[in-house]
Structure formats: structure tokens, C-alpha cells
Length: 258
Ligand code: CAA
Image (cartoon, rainbow, N blue to C red):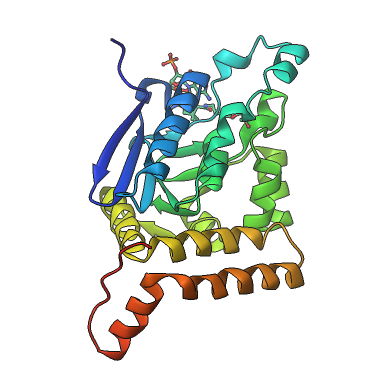
């Protein structure tokens, strides 16, 4: 049997997904994205999991969509198969938080995959870029849309039009990544962060993710209304009572995730 393209592990309440095509720098092909999507959906449905981490290898989170697999595509084949978003959209449907732990190259589709996650943690070795322009194409999995929202138009245009790479420090300054850590601490830090998130009440975590994501889809007044509805609904959870009673009683809360 061939080796899995995505390694799946449980780390307490955290689901860890490791992209596993190291020789191809985790180039993202259809089979890998199918495996990743299936693993994400399984963790999302698992009540024992509260957050997920996607990581790659030391050298590459992912060096992009698989160039060999797409080089001979015709327009009709690309269009009819909904290339490449068909199985990439799965990540957007995941309701629990997903952290990208990025070391090495996160290029093209690899950068786009990382940006589809909710939080990016980068090793000092991380390098981000949208080099598609050098291949005679443009980003096809959200690079032209999510990158400007993350880093602003000026830097997004610079990266998308020149294809240059950005190191971890520049990515942190630009607001693309939330933390930069030494390479040998990357996975521990990402899992620690996911463990903290997974220890919170799951309904509030899921609604917080939904509300923040809505900020990028709606005008402010609509977003505020959406937030208020979710905020009020959380008073219907047991965990809200537990969280506030525990605060008053000066003890740690014991969340039941309901
Ligand atoms: N697709 C397919 N194979 C890839 C790949 C990719 N995106 N990136 C790297 N590889 C393969 C290489 O072909 C090579 O395979 P072989 O050993 O069989 O020759 C192996 O991974 C190692 O790569 P290199 O020898 O090139 O390693 P390097 O250290 O010299 O360079 C690199 C590293 C700068 C990341 C270089 O591999 C590179 O530029 N890769 C392509 C980056 C890129 O253009 N990504 C965008 C792809 S298009 C896309 O993603 C579209 C979209 O928006 C969805």
C-alpha cells in the first residue's frame, strides 16, 4: 500500500495533520487534497477534537499546487473539473479552528492553503510567496483575494506581480502570521496554541471563528448584528453558566463543550 499523503494524529483534543510528500516539497495534488479534506472533515465531526493543526516538513509547508499535474491541462479540463478549488473548498467548511504551522516554503497554493487556515504560526525559516506569475498564470486558490486582506494592497501587488518571496519576519510585520518561533519549536508552539483553544468551550470557539470570518464578508453594521445574535445565543449554553460561575467562585472552569 502506498504511504499516506497526509499523516493524521490525535494530540489530546488537537487533531494534527502533516502533509507528507516531502520529496516533492509537499506539492499539492488532487489525491493529497482529497486526503486532507477527508481528514479535516473527520476531525471536525469528532467531539473529542477542539482544534486542528496543519503542518508540512522542515523544508516546505507546501511549494504550491503540483505543477507537473497541471501543466498539460486544457481550458475545458480546468473549467469542467473546477480546478483547483473542488477539494480545496473543504477547508472553508471546517467549523473548528485550524492553525497552519509553517516551516520552509509556503508558495503558491501552499501559501493559499496556509491563508485558508484561521491562524498562521511561522518558523523563522518560513518563506511565503505567490510565484504563479513566473509560470504564466495567477494564483488560483484565493491568493489574489486573501493576501490583500491580510497584508494590504501594496504588499500583495508586490508579491503577486513580481513573484518574490517574503521571509517570516516580513510576513509577521505585514500581518500575515500571528507568531514567529524558532524552527525547532514550531510544532510544539502550534500544538500548545491549539490545545489552549481546544480547552475553551467549543460552541464559543466555533462561533468566535464564524464571527471573525464574517468580518471579511459583510459591512460593519451587518457584522455587528451577526455578532450580537451569536453572543446572545451563547447564554443558552451550559458552558457560559459554568465559565461565569467558575470566575465568581475563583476556580478554573470545567467546560463540557455544550
Ligand atoms: N509542483 C510540483 N513539484 C514541485 C513543486 C511544485 N509546485 N515544487 C517543488 N517540486 C518538486 C521539484 O520538481 C523537485 O522534484 P524532483 O526532485 O523530482 O526534481 C522537488 O520538488 C524539489 O524541488 P527543487 O529541486 O526545485 O528544490 P529547490 O530547493 O531547488 O527549490 C523551490 C525549492 C524554490 C520551492 C522550487 O522547488 C520552486 O520554485 N517550486 C515551485 C514553486 C511554485 O511555483 N509554486 C506555485 C505553483 S502554481 C500554484 O500553486 C497555483 C495555485 O495558485 C493553486
